[in-house]
Image (tube, rainbow, N blue to C red; front, side, top):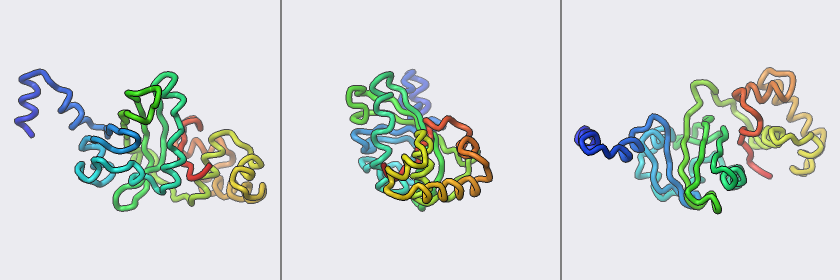
Length: 200
């Protein structure tokens, strides 16, 4: 390793070591398949780099449903200005769920997910994961989209009262009085950037 670093400084070719040793997780994807990642990314998820290469990104999500439903989020922004970020729940190799911040840049803005580079930052130190059921994640995600309880009920094919019960339980779980407080407890970010949905 030291030889490679010395060689980079001798030749002035730093791109390789910058990618490999960046203190944030970096991953190159092609149609949501991991083509390459750096050491920080592999360690964040509890894998060796070789275990992740050429694997579908779905293996890093809490469920296949969440992988599918997050897919199109941000595609419009990437097409328009090639910038995107969100904060989402991901899964480590041992099954531990954690919050991370994701930022993306596409090499093919006309088809943003064809070829892209992403950064992942582990937020565990500032935002511990609070266990949520799949339905709770669905409710939070729809609330973050600005939907009313009645609209959420129609989307999920459940009663309006059931949505209200889930909402009340979420407020109690996070010790807050309203939806704004709920989003604040999820990290104090704008609801546009909370991604934890498991179904449309």
